[in-house]
Length: 190
Image 1 (spheres, helix red, strand yellow):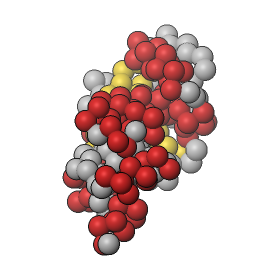
Image 2 (cartoon, one colour):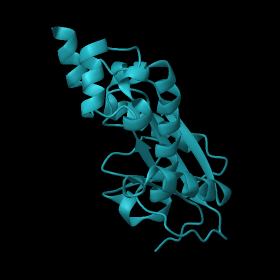
Image 3 (cartoon, one colour):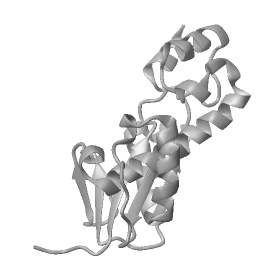
């Protein structure tokens, strides 16, 4: 069996949101890294993710990839997610021998990519990537919420919560909303 020196974990955040970009992270742990409490970002609080993201950054080679709302609308959310993953992988300062991607789809880069279903729960470097991607995206949405206050993105991060849907019904669609996503698309048809 082949041993790999540099293994990158890759995951995305924001795929199911109604607004904002999709963000991916790629993480290669440094040899000496011993990190605790790393798990799927969805199982951590906002504060826990912030603290862990600092530890992950100190103990890894990492990169972020982003696909914009315009790209999501042009090529669809799956392709935009894969594009953001590809950008994260290609921006790494180290070249991984193996790339482990959460889920069932991986970007087409080379034969180094392997998919892992529920990888963010099973493999620490993927969990770390999920944390970095989520923190980066949450910060984008918090910043955007200052301009679009009526949608409460600082709390819902662009997901289709009751507050967000009520804001959409009352104030309409912004440039940051994904117009090809069903709730937004249906509003445009009315």
